[in-house]
Image (cartoon, rainbow, N blue to C red):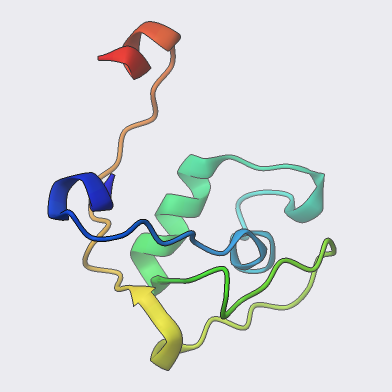
Length: 88
């Protein structure tokens, strides 16, 4: 959504960072995007190109100098529960 609001290109956030750093989810065994956003609001997020997907659980390697989203940018988010909510 950030790209829609600002008109900037869409940057794909790192899935691996979510697997490694989101301690509320279960790594490669699944997880919730809402937990990823909570984690991102605390430590920020990196792009997929700087924190590549590895298809395995690992230790958190979130690097301050490579963050593309600072923790201040994700202060709110909303989990949509239905297709109708997504269409709106």
